[in-house]
Length: 308
Ligand code: EPU
Image (tube, rainbow, N blue to C red; front, side, top):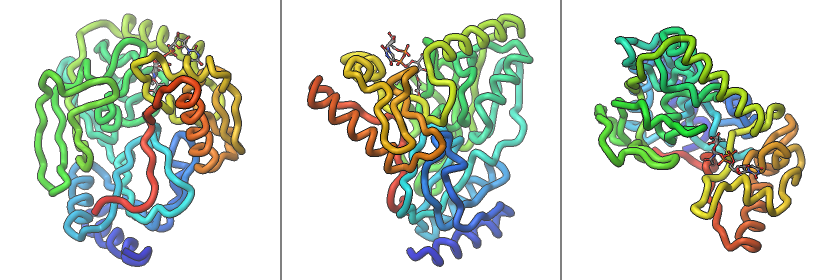
């Protein structure tokens, strides 16, 4: 599809659903790493219902599109992004609490949900203190840190399939693994149901503070990043391997391997996506050649066209 056709299709989907439309939208400001070019059109649905209506309209029209959550685990190329972006991170609405059970739209920020859980004395999300991103993205990638992850509290999810069908998924054993979940490629998370544990606001705050201190001591503070770039291979933590090979501080343009934690690439504000991708390839090559280990990316990379 041409740029004009993508824009016309996005306009029709936005108008039919009362969503906001941004033409020639730059992705970099929406991504925590702050790199990435422009897409022909970005649609911002208001709520989970509108998300599914927009995605379905694009599916029906076989319009290449991709869904953007909080943009905290994503690297978008500098150019050639020929698809419509549906920005779910803008569609939230209030979470519905029932004791320690909470139903939240996928676009709800993980930080906002943690703050609410803290006020209610519901434990289970403290590991996410200091993390950006949306709850939908966190479920899809089974985000985790400091000994816990999303898998510990997710009970259900409402998913939109690539064929436009809605399904409620009830979590079963085996649904989650290390940075892996039951959400399949092409599926969009619309809502999630979490079950936390009854505790007190003081205890939840103390644990979140502990996580914040640990994160501050081991991970970069300044610059823009997408968190860890690589999954940890069976041989050990990717950060340790990259550190042992002396890669901390390695630089390409405005991107460098963090001196605080070698599995983070940080953008000083001037990096391009090709700086970051080049640095990633260089690190991967060194690890392959010197250690015989194949590092797998943890961050998602958007290039070229989207799926219709
Ligand atoms: N290490 C080094 N040098 C480094 C970095 C780490 O020697 O530059 C060593 C540490 O000293 C430690 C070991 O490697 O002995 C593991 O490091 P760390 O505790 O920082 O954990 P990690 O395995 O590198 C994982 C997650 C992080 C999460 C932390 C904290 C992955 C890829 N990363 O990092 O998640 O915050 O544990 O629990 O699983 C993310 O997913 O984006 C992410 C940052």
